[in-house]
Amino acid sequence: VAGTYTITTGGTTVNDLIAAIETGTAGQIDVSLPGGQFQLTAAQPGHTFAISPSAGGEPSNALAILGVNCFFSWSEQVGRPLDDLTETIRVNDAIEAEPSLISSGYLDENGMVAPGSNDVARAILNLQDKVIDDMGGSGTSTTMDAYYSSLVAQVGVDVQNTVNNEKFNDTLLGQYISRKEGISGVNLDHEMAELLKYQHLYQAAAKLISIADEMMQALISIK
Image 1: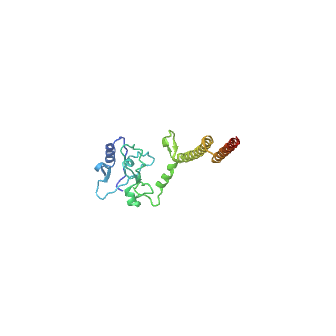
Image 2 (image 1 turned 90 degrees about the horizontal axis):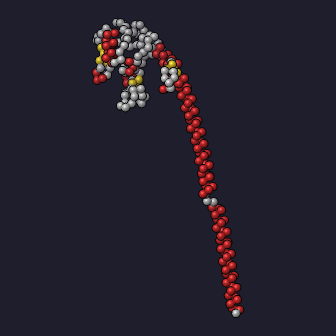
């Protein structure tokens, strides 16, 4: 190992980061932006380098934002906020092509990863208990595990409320339909009975007229 360098950035621009890296590594790493892509290259032919967060330090996520040493990659969309990248997130192309690039441990003071080290895996596991400010836009600080549990519970409540509302509306609709049919509906059996009643009245009236006609004819013939 030729040397270990610690980079501390105090600026907020890409140029500030470039200057900090080149100065902090004593010229051992060249930084460039070919085609707008952030690129780190060993200054000496045949040399390699690795990047690891400082122990106990608060990472700035600058390299992650620039796409360096990332497990995931993403692309920006016009008109979408930078923090809304879930639709384009994917596994880094380099890792898909060569899964052995995934490191399960951090670099030690010699720039090496100890065989069998699982520091990264344990760090990922511990993320569930890390308190995050304004988690999910709730305005409160909570852990990912607690937020996920509350989210699942809320989804369950929302689903149950939706099911209950559907049942209530179906029952209400059935009552309205029954009431409508009770007011304006037609009972075929009742209407048929009414028709038969009027038919019998017509037949009786016709019979009465026929008898009256026979009586008149009889009286006329007597005269």
